[in-house]
Image (cartoon, rainbow, N blue to C red; front, top):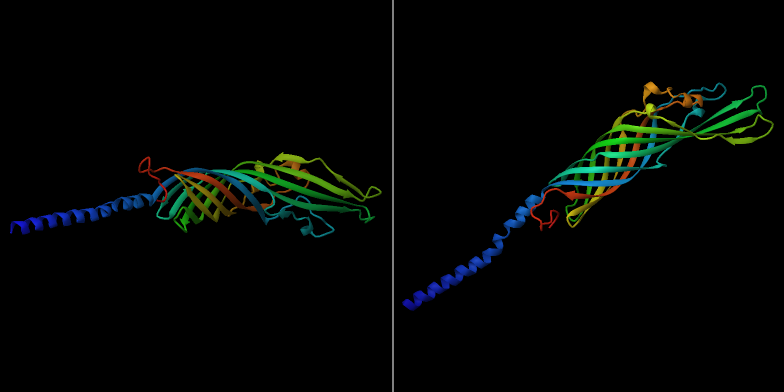
Length: 290
């Protein structure tokens, strides 16, 4: 009986040790669970920079001079869309929670757009004598943008594509306008082409602050303990960017026949940058994906 009892005790001890050994990996499963829970929430801080293209859309048109012998529409400004590259730099502050991100990205942005128009004078007594003037004008605008965005991660791996949407307010910092006047003179005994010296004037009084909506796509790539980001978005203004009270206030521009139209401003904005996580478990724990 003693031998049997001894064997039973030995078997019980072996079974208990084996069971504890098998349960030991299971006891470590709580750590990944805690890490997963930690990774559900994160703060990010970083820097982005890139380029933008601008489209100016007239809401209502204005002019200094009105033709009497041809349609007024022939003197309307022709706006060129998305043909001038600007630049921007942003600081990104983002809070991430379970696939959703809430972000603000204060931005300094420089944008440009171009328009042109034409006037023609004809001698009523001698129609062969005429003068044609071409106006090409470039507007350069500096804004401080304050967007509020919501992002959603489509995938949650090292490579994380996302969609985003939000609103923004743009505060005017500065504006300049350059005007090139050229033409053809048919009234001086031949055909003479000419180009006047470019005029550059400060035009901050002609523009105003505005607000709008935006939407776009992007992707993050986790590299070690930092995140590389690339995004593209479309910014659409929902208010007039022109200062209506100063439409005819610039004497130099009014003197050459220019009047500011009411405008909406749309931008295609492309940025790349790097983001740094603000929350850590420990110095040797990577705050990104396991």
